[in-house]
Image (cartoon, rainbow, N blue to C red; front, side, top):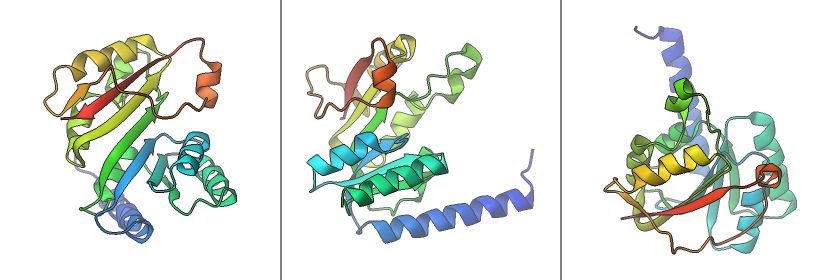
Length: 195
């Protein structure tokens, strides 16, 4: 099915606006910390406060969440902490070409629990390969979920990838209880390292 010209034009305009916004926010050849699904910004604002030398970017689909997160960063006077409304893959595609990731945080993503919806899960082998194009060896991805089946699926396929490997000995650099973490009876965490 061929997309309608109006849809193609809408996507083109949205991506051009996103590219303009991202180019204005970050210096060329920046190395950033990315939080995917940053919600109201609780974690990333705290992380940026403890790491003033790191350029931090949070991405979320919901506009009201992004606005609340931006206000938190402004109140905390964190000029190196930014929040963008976008889909994660689209944001990554629209970043200036020299920008890469030192860290990627994915905390309590939607587990899409029904089997027929598993294809919608963010963390899949293709996404890790896509992300690898923007990361240097040694970069880290931090993943935490309260959905055990999702956790075990990611942990299993990570061992088969050429671009990323789990690092069970890697430390979790900052603990800050998110809203989802507070509600979870238990959760699992893993760190993946770009090989």
